[in-house]
Image (tube, rainbow, N blue to C red; front, side, top):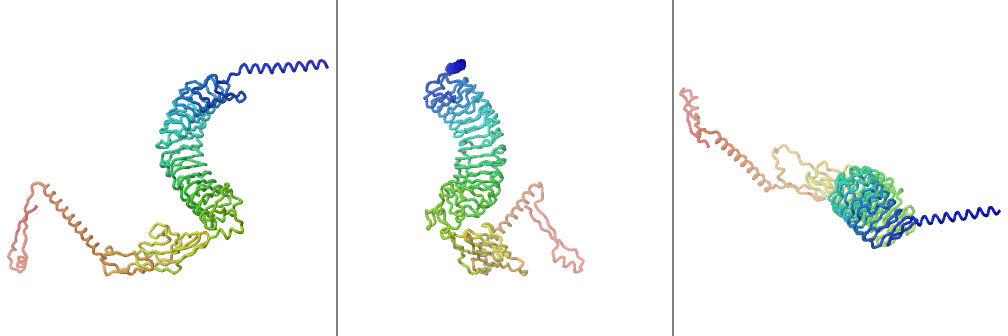
Length: 609
């Protein structure tokens, strides 16, 4: 028993000795923390922020993993200033007054992973500044005054994966600026003073997956701007107030899954540049003055799941606008000018999970009944739509009404064409005819026209449907004869009206070979007029035609005379007179009388010019 107690005491004294020795050893190797800094021995962090430092302090712990020098007054980094910090992983020099970084300033930081130089006064980054940073993965030089990226600026950063260079004053990016960046997957650039997209420089980033362009000064994205970025999946273009269009092939060569063009000046959805992006999942066109989403124009985006058009000028989403989008899950059109959103705009609302429709001047009628019926399946983002133009439901949240109340509140009135009298018009060939079709309903119905083959008529062409609901047939031809159909439709149904047109061809005549049809004016016939007025003789046209013909003839003769004159002068010595002999008619008669006398000839001389 006594022996066991002795052994126990020996073990306790041994443990106490080892603990004392460890503390003594640690105290001997630990370095003191510099003044104005706070050091964490456990986390190996040195925090010198807000220390009013004008230079990097001396005596920094050599085993530090993180060094924070933010919010100081450091203006210059001399070469090899951090060479003793061989274990450093993260260095933050943001929010200083840095204007100059010498070559080899970071030499020795072989293990450094992140370097933050944001919010300083750098105007240029000399080649060689980043020498030795062989493991750096993140570089942040945003919010400086950088004007140019020179050739080989980043050539020493082979492991770099992300560059943040937004909010600078870049005017030029050299073609070889990104040479050596074989691992960069994310790039943030500011191009407010760039005159073109730096396409040649971007070709060096062979594995780039995310590109963010801020403050581009261009009015249009040129064709083939990103043609070599075959691995790019995310493209963000933001805060470009001059950007109005995307050229047809501006996104050629890309296989994007995410595209955002925000805070720009696009007045239309760029359907043509988008149509080949069959892998696109996310599309954001927020804060653009886009007024329409047209029907049947987005069907090529087979995998699209989200469309954001927040804070724009959207007035209408047409029927079949999202036709073909079988995976469509989210639509955010909040803070626009929409009065309604019809069910027929979607390929299928069964896949729709999130809908942002608030802050729109909605007319609460039967067109929005589908939203109410699916309210338990839709996420409205906590902002329910309200009625702002309906007098009966103004400022009410129509989602709060019960199922029994809704059918009587969200109603529509079927269209009715006002003038149902049969319209039959007979005109002569060449006249212009107009048919009118006025309709009423709630909501206001749209009016369309069908030709005798029941094909919809467009707003352009010789036979066209006008925006005021009327039909115009210009310079009517016999083949235009037939029955045309006016169709007025809204969400509650439709109404139709048939009108007839008969066009008489010009009568064929074999008596008169010469016709002056071009000298007659055929007046246009108004609706209801048969157009049997006789053409009137146009004396003014006749005089103009005669004058033009006389001048043309006189000019041709004058040219011939002048030509002959100069040709005769160019022949040298020629006779200027000509003698012509002839036999008078009387002499011929007397000779035939059998007298046997020879015929007398006469001569006269003519002077040549």
